Length: 165
Image 1: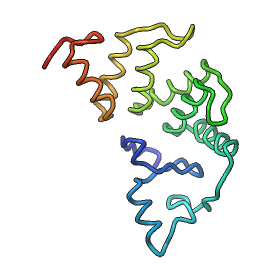
Image 2 (image 1 turned 30 degrees about the vertical axis):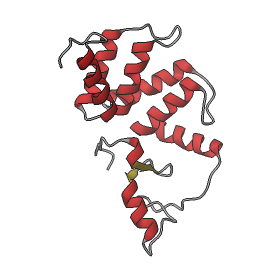
Image 3 (image 1 turned 120 degrees about the vertical axis):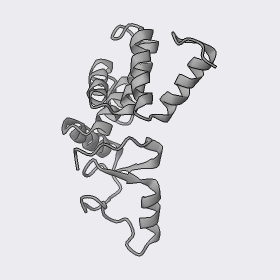
């Protein structure tokens, strides 16, 4: 299963911290409404218990260390911003974000694009060229927000893209 890459939007996925897997939210809704319920993870069968933010942070870090791409992106984002139970460590967060992007995970590529477009304090200098390459890659892998932003840049001829109405 770890070799299967599904490039779906995070808003349509239910993430499972127990095993690092995910299924679509409509499938989760169907499970909850069925007689089966959703007391256990549908992938690894671990009990789904309510946990604290600290427990969630520890579990996401464990998944990131295992190479789970969505967890690497989340750890990166959380460390860059110092949120969700993670201490602010921008350099380490950037490294995690790059690990997720190296696996061609579109949301990580798009996030990294924004980091290069806007810069990140003294860690990343602004680079429109690098930002555009990452955004194009995310868009070509089907990332909706990257496609939308790319279309906007082409329509207006901004951020290094030639106007193409």
